Image 1 (cartoon, rainbow, N blue to C red):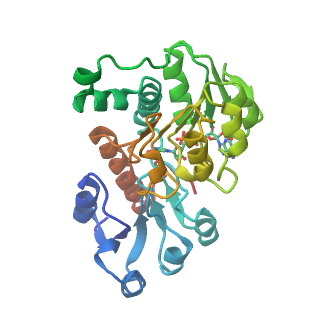
Image 2: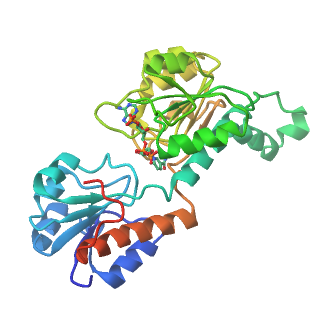
Length: 315
Ligand code: NAP
């Protein structure tokens, strides 16, 4: 792989991926230049691969600037930051990191549900600020076990969430474009019906043109003042101003959010609300999973160079 020119789009956590790419390939660090256009122009002949992530991928402009680009190996499962159409057009291969992160993201979704319903973060603040001593017992919260859970996108992560929620005796239902014939869970062909018939709605589908703002005002109204929304998919799946106003006005019961429309800038109106739990997009953020993801990124590049089948091809 030593001759493979790889453009890494931004620093990634942990540094393991960058260190390994540096050892194994000819690495170009996109963030080291303040003039990206000029940087790409100077190195355009050498770069044959792009490694991006959930924040910076391979947009049309970057792809067009690289005439020798052969593969985009993304350090993420979601490919909303990769121009897949452009890649198909140019015959550029695309890979992602499915499966290895599924458990972590599903674990975190359950964590968000519990934290939101049981007010774990608020309780923690109550203890740390001395209010327990001053004011006495904390208020009562809401039970998770047995609540109905609706899942938007019963894919790898959605299914892993469903399995975990089943262990909490939750009835599970889901919405996706097609009914999963091998699934025992109740299918709704309308997201509105799903939202109206569950108490906790978990968003776990990819961000595409069709799913942008799939959680809109109507869906939020259908979930209602006792309902809880959990988003571990992507921020733009939710119409965020609508979500904020519903939470502020008490038209939605609560929200657990790992992702936001404009990261890393979640809406400040949410900061003062105790019925929301806010996380900095950390679904796959464990040492174990990030190492497995990095190995998959490298494995795909190696397979490409050796002309072997790619490990996790998308395009
Ligand atoms: P997956 O296995 O491909 O599952 C995606 C599911 O979404 C499928 O069930 C699919 O079913 C459904 N879907 C696709 N388009 C849809 C549409 N237009 N309307 C309704 N449902 C639709 O993907 P995954 O591995 O579970 O990952 C799902 C997403 O989670 C990723 O794309 C990524 O954005 C997000 N994610 C977030 C984090 C994080 O850190 N928070 C980490 C990893 C992944 P149909 O084809 O039947 O519609």
